[in-house]
Length: 147
Image 1 (cartoon, helix red, strand yellow):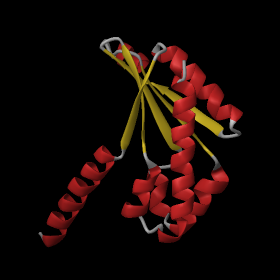
Image 2 (cartoon, one colour):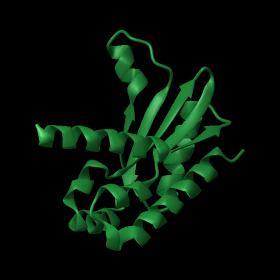
Image 3 (tube, helix red, strand yellow):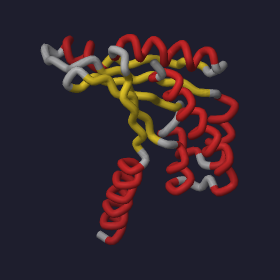
């Protein structure tokens, strides 16, 4: 019973932490255009695009409607591997992900700030890497939403 309470408490703390570390920005472009700009920006920075998820298309296949909603999954295996060598559980968070979605006609772009991983996982010696990842994501988003 104590372990169940501990796990439940940890999940609540993680949810609160991630909520506070969800970075969002408004894009002046339509969701599809924002996604295209994001994909090109990521590639131009030498990062690997692993896949894209089109949630709105999946919803449509289920006879449901969802405004344009996409996730771009990308990263640098050399960096991610170093982090996972320190704590393999980080594999649940990596590769990096950026969400592009439209809500009431407004396009948003969002991601979880990787610095939070240092608080959740055993990554004390990798805080510089996490900060660099955070800076990179901030730069990418700023460039994507720039008019």
